[in-house]
Image 1 (tube, rainbow, N blue to C red):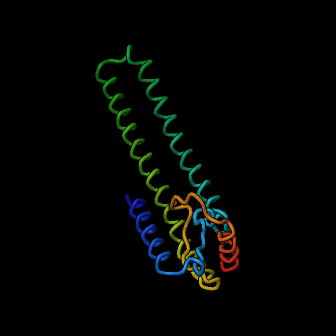
Image 2 (cartoon, one colour):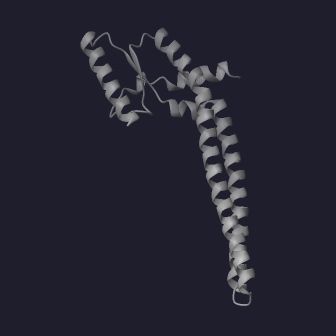
Length: 173
């Protein structure tokens, strides 16, 4: 829904700019924010750190899954020789462990999502400042992010993502 509103607003802005100005004087620039985030040195480091964190959390989940599998197999093998009360006790322990596992998996999923968004949000203001500065220096009328909207065609020579990456890396050494 937000993307659709974003698209409509951008399209309306494009129509307004194109109708208000002489099309020969317009200079529209393009950037790819996702590419910039993933290609800058800081972005690469954050991606590597994030991958390590995700792997660590996946190992944590897998160890709990192994415990659950062992508990279930043990319960299935021994259920025929156990009395009713001990079988129920083991089933309750298994169900509790399963609930704990589901909560852990959901917590980890949410934590990973939050960390990913936080990492991106920390970089975006600096990137936007650089985009703004380059756009002003080079007299762009408008700059569009090709990663957030569907643009069937744009002139690659007006894509200055690489300049933004270079500037961001210079500023964040």
